[in-house]
Image 1 (cartoon, chains in turn red, orange):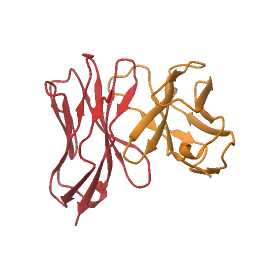
Image 2: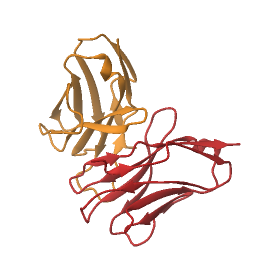
Image 3: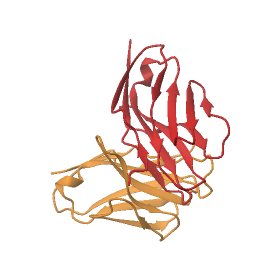
Image 4: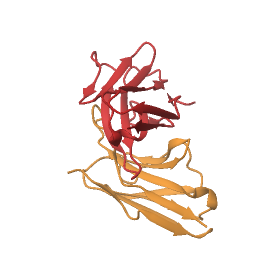
Length: 113
Length: 114
């Protein structure tokens, strides 16, 4: 069964605008971790942000924030003030208590000048 | 600086060949992973290892095997390569503890099987 769902195959955003990339997850474990990664055209996977299942506050890292809605099992990534260099594939992932990671199918973000 | 290296960025092999993809990490991580990435399918786990000589099947182990003789090295083996194994292969490692620790990825190997 799919554990991570990203419903947006592709997104466009105007430069300097904010954009939200959706992610929902499915687990019955109380303890888990949620991650977002960026993959530019070069292929490297870059870690962006982490949210623990017990964290009370939404995670933020610079222009990235994670909108964590636990009851809805949602972990959306918000990128503020988009830049041309933000154009990339973005993957949501969940780590289970056994340290296994599950990835979504990704969202391709294009920033328009 | 943490580092995961993969033996090749690009590889071209023929159907039926035995293929070895090597991954080395220098962070003393217990966990190591092999993923396959295909457009529209995201990353799919082939195998992972949580200790030397230990391995667990992931979602798509068929046609693949792995070897972990040393903590820092995790090898993916295609016993008899087929065209449907043409893909991007990503290796990753992570510490045992979990918590805020993410996976660290190698640069990937783009394998083409002719």
